[in-house]
Image (cartoon, rainbow, N blue to C red; front, side):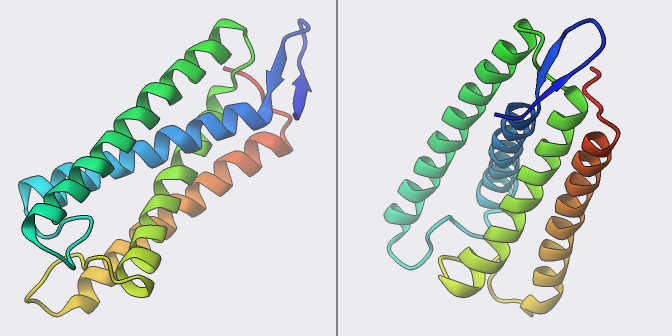
Length: 158
């Protein structure tokens, strides 16, 4: 486990600070996708290649997984904070990495490779795909920049 010693003998768990952010970022982006695109707009379900009942079940399983990830992530975050081992900058970077990684994985693997669903049906997909994947790439690159900058500065400050 990577650690960073700071003045005052506080030990920041660099890897854990990033990974807890990644976990929470994935869960938050999954929740946004599920709530906005699956429920409010009803553009697609997690798995659209079967019956409506299976599609609804797949949405429920995705939602359950994101809630478990959020709860677990926030307990892990609270533990790191309680022990003084959390770097909030690294965690924010990890959150952006997780959100962007989820978005790109969903857009490229779920939509194009596995064809579990599309963003929307009955429309020209290219503009939707471009916006979806560019948004994911921007989040991912922002997360990389935040983590890289924080690590290169030896930053473990809260």
